[in-house]
Length: 256
Length: 256
DNA sequence: CAGCCGCCTTGATCCTGATCAACCGGGCGA
DNA sequence: TCGCCCGGTTGATCAGGATCAAGGCGGCTG
Image 1: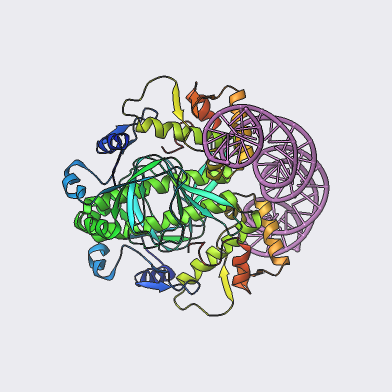
Image 2: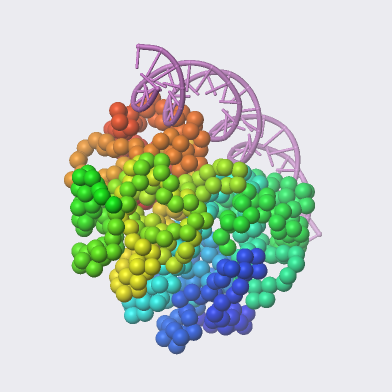
């Protein structure tokens, strides 16, 4: 598949080693955790890039999934749906996140592109052969999976025990941190970041309805905690205030 | 540390290779996923067994954790607490489950023994050396972590979208399946299994209050979905009925 | 045996977030 | 240009689960 210039730029930056998070400077994250420089030539021949439109379904729960890979640009959502249609997002894939489970044929979740999204993908059998030959890939996958597990557990705390207002504040903190982590040169000072996703996606993420999401965002705006600018952009004048609203204790808490 | 006869019996059976789950016969689970028979001699010299009393705190969030290991008998709980004391259980460790994160010094969760619990433990540096030497251990850890991630996501669906009644039914389904999976020779017919944990633990697990837990269990009993016997034992006359109450679709759903 | 404590149950009331409904504004195709 | 549709906002009302409160039961200890 032929990629456009913007996508190619993304692919190039995708190969960079690490970025730093301004909000929690300790935490670092490789943009593509299994592609370290010394593996590049070996992996490059097996990679392919695929692009999905916003709203496009990448995979259905229960379907066979023939590829694995990671997000280069854009946002993808993992979700599960109950028999009567209630839906819960169970994962949010931002650039550098891995999609697909080595060693399992079936896909456990619906995967939908929230925005236009580019994936760096491998055929699953080829990837598994690569993993078998290169144990360092397995090690990095384990670390990534453990990180995801930590995020999932933080999310469980949010879903089980936080109020609607705290949930919204937490979401903003998470997105601000993730955005800062992905910035090559994060700007100091006031945080400004894009809200990639719709109210519906936020509601599915937080276990709320869209009406409640809308109301609580309005309330946070009314109280001066956040400002909404054009292009679905959020400005946070005081990050500590926002973190305070999120219910987490100042130090620990939300994993980026 | 000296173990009693009952504990020694548990340790012996702990070395058995696999058990089968009557409820979902496809799913199998090694009782101790990193201890396959061919590794036994090598690992044995590094193992030690530790016992914790019911209610005893095994580790605090934020603390350094010098050991890793897995549950031999009993039940342990992972939980996170918000600044104001609201608590959410984020993991339930039953026999065969792994505790501790290779490659991280600090413990992210409070770990509490729900019942008397025996762990098979390794000093973390030794375990990491073993892992480095034996890549098959890393592979199994990856698979276990992926399983845990799937469970966590199933749990997120429960926390975000299920009603109190569905949450209770789901919990019973999970415990029935886990119990059946751990039975050496599961009895066919009506399911009977122990409720290892208190109402408080259930409430923390499900994101409810103890009063709601109590009320919903009473309601399920009144409606004939479950029966409560002595010794905190639950009898399920019709598993399909219970699964129906849990809100999951019949096939997919709750991971054991 | 009495008294206490921990765990559980049940009742009454309250409140947060869901539901139902109306409306707004922008983008897009007819 | 009109009208529709989609995503978002806001209001009114409802209901599920939280909270507050009282009491029961069983086990443990003095």
